Length: 223
Image (cartoon, rainbow, N blue to C red; front, side):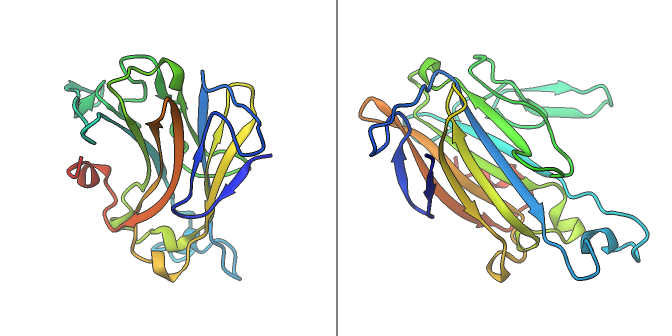
């Protein structure tokens, strides 16, 4: 049975206190969320539109691969997209919607869910932890609300948000859940959790640290 974590709690991913072992050759980091409803239905559909149409509420999963100094050593290179815009940080140690697969092939984002609709994981990042180059000491998992500042969308509007780790055989190892409240008002990004090397294995730590910015680039400056 998966362990339900609280903020700040750390567990061993390979083996829990009950003696159950997990296959870390491929680990799915699943993230999910729901948009908070009001008595009149989904209030986001009425936001800035007089109730005429539903507003898009796009949350993005991001992973930072950090070295032993706690830094992103390779930010990738610039690439021109099909629409003519320049994509920076392509094929570097940041996995995100514009660079969904790490050059090593050992960590990738399965896709960009722009609505959060439906049950289960809304976005997934797959990590082959056992194959990851030893130079990577820690992986930080974040979620940002695309154009959250512009659209007045924040984590105070989110409920049933979670991050979970699932092993190669589909066994859920751990889950960390949180629901938005007034303390998350105006917060458009979240450092959700991390996995890191420790004593020959991998640990998982629930973080739940909110940020006002709606772009991961601002958070990346610290790394």
